[in-house]
Length: 172
Image (cartoon, one colour):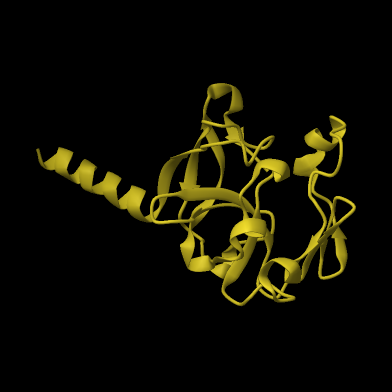
């Protein structure tokens, strides 16, 4: 009984403070993540200094719903899309995770043109917040719709799929 109690306590501590399973619900992160992929969320390192541009994060969008998105803008960044190209602080950035969609010859841009100030009324991402987007730009509810997100709402980073086995491994 004692060993079982210790095991349960250890499992609760690990899940609460370190790692947790999550199921991808929807198509907003395709082609990187598929609907119903099962992943591990790393709750360690979710302070601002450890969240990097292009990390995939899970955050509380509402009390009932968690979203999984890619970090595009960090505090102080100016974000702009034009001609289906990402510009951060005036510098062009490649987005290799979108190449599958671009190679399939979709008609029109994946990401409609915008400037950050058109969305949040400010020219830079506010301190303590992040600008996030789904990889499936045409079908993602993200910072273009909900605005920037507080870093405190981030549960953790994720990049490891454990199910289905055909998708097993690290995603970028």
